[in-house]
Length: 297
Image 1 (cartoon, rainbow, N blue to C red):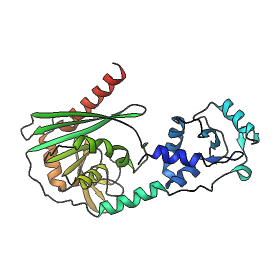
Image 2 (image 1 turned 90 degrees about the vertical axis):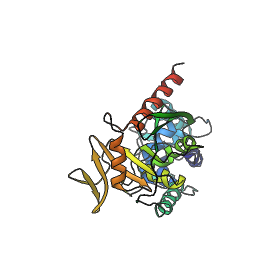
Image 3 (image 1 turned 45 degrees about the vertical axis):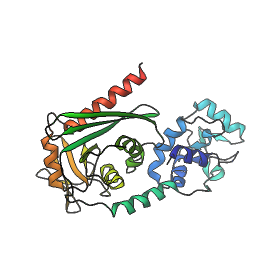
Image 4 (image 1 turned 30 degrees about the vertical axis):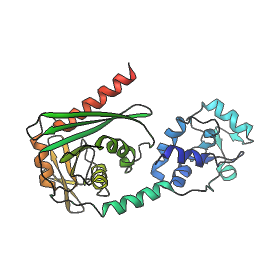
């Protein structure tokens, strides 16, 4: 899904002489958590016909995304909107009657359906493992795939570049990263995939490693640098009383699909050389190198 285009369609509905807020647009997308992302997407708007200046803060403050404040004031006044002390009276000028299909709500419902297909039990043979990671510029994602044999030798590398169609929104990371991971995995069949992100260790027990694993039916492991949620007891992480992952050194390991917590930890430890397992570390290095080379040819 191209959430940028979905958001621009909503903003184009704001009529002349009215404004909306970042929160209102986010709710029309289907989740208030997208409010910050709305501002970022407006700042990157490439279309002259999308009136970004008609989106303001929830207190009527103007904000500065997409256009400078002085230009924004001029455009709003041209629309006939009165501004007092740098704010707009939302009781008088607020538009919140969007025609929308609530795209984020639909994605959330899709995640719930996919989660029912997730299996946290061992169902794999292990001879190869691949690591995947993504490096971002302002509008592009650079994905890297590095595959190892069980002895720790690199046997394949691969990179892709894609335009970003989905901003970062908490708990929707899979929809930002899955298109890149899906392109990387085309024509590849590693026995296990490690992803820089969470698996079962997730507020909804369905992180990006789970989403990827279920969609592609591949045993997957989430490797996270920070503990997103849960209670830590003697290195094990629990969510609602369920063991969902383990802290290994400085990282948090959790299963994604078709692998148990213990096996995910065992395979991760097998490839630990520094603070990250080598498949993910090497993918991280390759993704960053690819981005830098593209930005500075």
